[in-house]
Image (tube, rainbow, N blue to C red; front, top):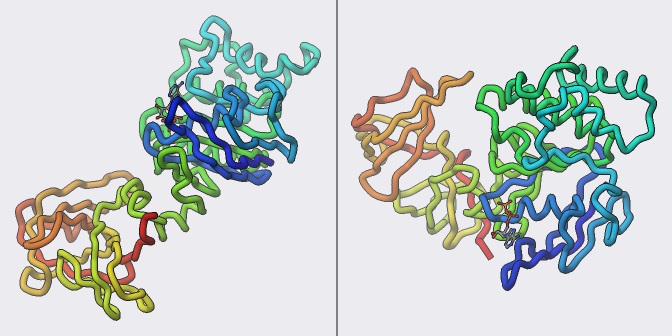
Length: 344
Ligand code: ADP
């Protein structure tokens, strides 16, 4: 459906996009993820035709889009700066998405009703925009973007403005909706939770390049670099010397998965791999922080100050969570140790 080939965008000496190759298959939802300034918006703008690449190609359904203006690309855009028209009602906003097509008034009205149903706002056509909540406005914007049945729907921080509970609910609904409609989606977000929940495939950007692309599970299981691991929120990352099934780390010996090549490596220990023991049975640590995650799980994030080595993050169940300032021991579980590829 979409193919980027060596797409480069420069601002002065700096490349906002540096020879990016990316494909999005029909019916696939791809989320581009990365810190601020990594090139996510530039990527969307290039695909949308709002920005000309300095080098490379954008193909849609195989066709080179050079010289094709934005409104001729058959894309649905839900961008942060594409606000709804506050003086028009919800129905008129959705109908705006249909204006390019020569439909009769009756057909437009039927389609508007259908689209508002689809996004979970039945009967909202005559509602005034300012009377709608943030989440409802977001749904109207989505209905407007879906109205012309775009071949590719592009979302820029689609749920960025909404509060957490609503965001989590909408993500689940959006995913189900896109599945049902067979929509092809390219979304950009800085929120990894949102990306992981929405995407079939995530693409992590760094400084205008793709740091990693894969299914959410692949990326979560095997971050391609220390950068990706830290971006995903994993902070237990250290240099280590691997010999056989053990790595010598600043925390002392840590078991590594079978078959890990020996030598200097970078290790990630997932918080679930930091197991609490009696103080005498493991690496002695003091509990310096304790955060109840809330939501549906009863997991607690613990911050530990080990006797040696950098701070450790551990995850445990609320029932087993020690108090702040408690003295605990830590043992490491090989299953949750990941040997990261070296950064190039
Ligand atoms: P993101 O969406 O990931 O935050 P952007 O695509 O907006 O990143 O920006 C990528 C890089 O390009 C940043 O370093 C940003 O400062 C730069 N940049 C973006 N737009 C412009 C512009 N119009 N002029 C100069 N630099 C820009």
